[in-house]
Image (cartoon, rainbow, N blue to C red; front, side, top):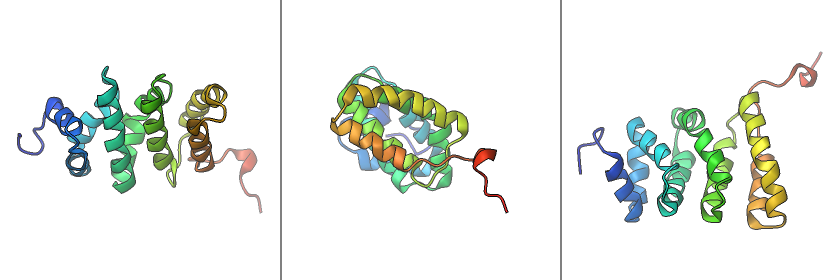
Length: 156
């Protein structure tokens, strides 16, 4: 394996596919370049790669500091939303878990919130009483917006 900082996409892919997800998580927490590769793997054509990339990213989000969470939110939000809508239930479930951990205690911008709502409403209708729908309700329960709209601001 190359020295840290010079890891290739293929090396990160091999880590997650060989169930060395913990190693990929540790690297992504220390190296933004590795985190960006992990975010790129969320869009891989191979469902197994995508599923395991989401598994690794979930641990990164749970263990990461604000810098890591900000990087995931700004550079990986579209890929996470795409994972929700992918049609692959394994990928969708892993994407929901990443999203739930990402939004917990981490405010979203108005734009990101609207994009999320536009993505999850059809999914709740699609999955009905399915486990994914229940997990999506947990995401909604943890949502925070970055700036409250003026109508909702406390007035003294």
